[in-house]
Amino acid sequence: MTKKLVINLKHNFQIFSIGAVFSAMGLLLWTDHQYFFWPPQFAGIMNDDGLDAIAVAVGIGLMYYALKNEKNNTVAGILLSITAGFTGLVAFVQLIHAIFTGQAPMGLGFILSCYLLAEVLYTAKTRNTR
Image (cartoon, one colour):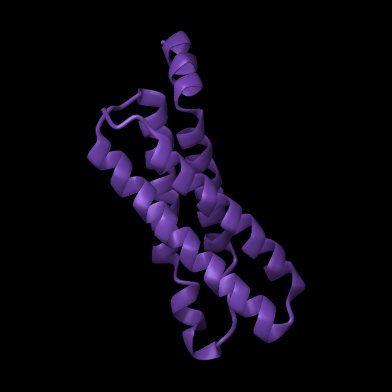
């Protein structure tokens, strides 16, 4: 059983790592209710626990998909699409915070989110769909 999981992890390491990072991002956002604060009228929506829980669930789903070596392209496409959309949205909001509020750490968050987005898009493009 363990040997099979290790082999599956070797074959699907990109998807597993994306899931782990996406889950970590979701947990970070879930625990910090003040992370996004500008514009103030949208702070409640941007810090919503429901969206963060979806990110954690999708990340866990990607890790499960990788470890079980699933071959369902529809599931992989949906999970990677949600990941790309959420990550792109978070990157955009972090960029707005960095520019308009002068919060330099948000600039670093923007760069890291863009890297994750690039990794997701690369994985989606190069994964075996047959």
